[in-house]
Length: 272
Image (cartoon, rainbow, N blue to C red; front, top):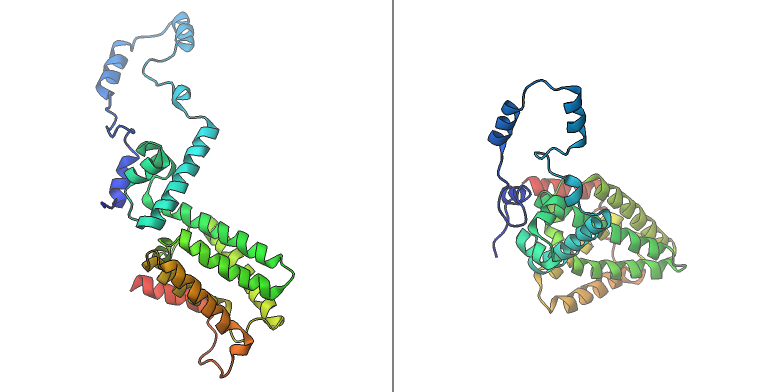
């Protein structure tokens, strides 16, 4: 499978769906200006104001309706998410367009670069995670809410299996993704603290520790084929059992990880 480079993805935004770059007609325009450069009478100016300029395309005729444009954007996002999950983030733009049932130009107009498309799928993933943590916080039982979120998170990782490594390498995310991530971290912190206060989760675990543990499950999910789902549920069960207070027999070595420390580790790994 051929992967798109960033330059190739940008070039597609400059062509029509047929793949032919639009030709320029600058010489014809210059000639028209030269022939028609004499002084204008008031009558001529009135006629010209009422007559469409044949050199200017009618953009209103070709401009897609707002609802259609929104539907096309969602179709592209759905297709990209599904293909990234199956084949990784190097899927060619032609395949994304074919899966979405739109032209290549439609993909490029909505997402001028491959990074723009990856970021949009990433934002969608964070929004789904925020929805899950809100639902977990709404449960009356803190322990049940925490366990529900862990299981939902592992299931979401299956949908976004190709984004795990991309997220580990990316240092700068769009503002919308950063806002969703901040809400997500706050929600997970509250969820964990409630479960710890209720005695459902051991108290020597931090939210950042959870992120590292979840990343391990995401890694095995991204590397596995059909058997990966059985492995995923196995490791989720081990994770939940290991987080219960009854599992504590010896103090854990080192101190719980903080989000700042996790971000620094991620940054060093990406830059190295």
